[in-house]
Image (cartoon, rainbow, N blue to C red; front, side, top):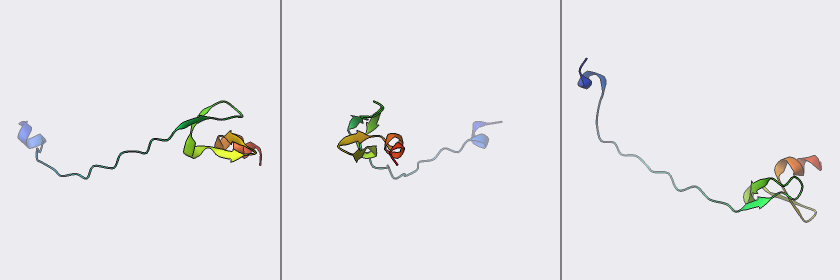
Length: 57
């Protein structure tokens, strides 16, 4: 089968997405795992990842 019957080649226009936000990495004071700053919860002056934070409640 000829390529022309299988493939269609054409120019397209696309919207390029914005660059992803890069957040600082912090260490959970409870388990020691590295976690993105926007996913850290502050509890009793400690930086806690979400699973450790949920363990307190």
